[in-house]
View 1 (cartoon, helix red, strand yellow):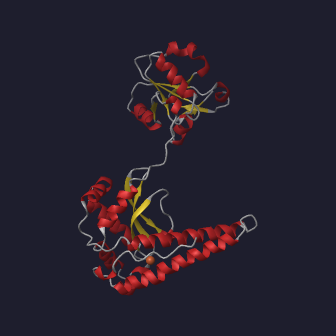
View 2 (cartoon, protein in one colour; view 1 turned 120 degrees about the vertical axis):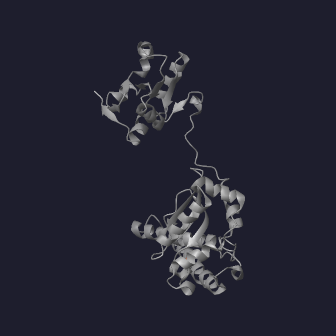
View 3 (spheres, helix red, strand yellow; view 1 turned 60 degrees about the vertical axis):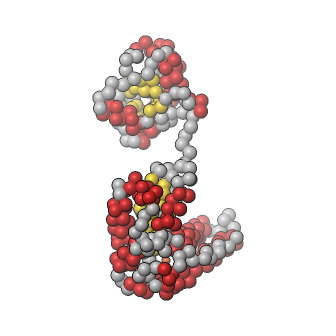
Length: 318
Ligand SMILES: [Fe+2]
């Protein structure tokens, strides 16, 4: 289905220091062109056979599609970000900005600084909600691209020259100041309310080990750095570890199939951390066995490779 032109969200005659002429030209030409370009590219793509089209030509068209799609979506968000008085940030939104940036002022300084960094170039400045991290973030998006994966933009500032040259000439800073005086905070807050309902990406859940506590590699690192006594047992299966070249620094390897042989070496007065290759089964099972025997045991989530992925120290495994 073709993309359709969205009606202009902002009422141009209500803006301070931004004329209807500027908005009309922007909406008609730049937004309108983006929608038309998007539809043309999608039509072209639909007519191609991906199996027989040269891969680089197909890839180029798909990149053009992203640019036209983002130009369409971000222009709609830009026009929906204008129309207020810019000053009165509603309470919930002010609280959200303070939580993510320290204060509304700090958010404003960051946002304006980012906008001014694009004064001689082009691109978007966005305020987005990131469900994975449960926070707001300011960021730029050059070439209608470089958006943050999974982030939901709730406010957009267009820093392409066409957004201001007609009225502000080369004075991008005056345009940025003008935008800040026209932010429709009530609308931004409504989009924020919608965005925070989006669930974060699903984490790995291991239902069969729900009652076995885990510890992250970062927590283990902190324990080791603080000199907290901890017994770290590498329980990678024998068939695997016999080929392994390295082992976590500070860990000792023990055969997970012969727990009875080595359980007597462990102290009950110090916590135990077990881990396997990726953290799915063996380390969890061993931690469960040790817990049943009365040890304060946890498994290290992500196992040996998560430790290595955080650049945790390893030594030669001989
Ligand atoms: Fe634009």
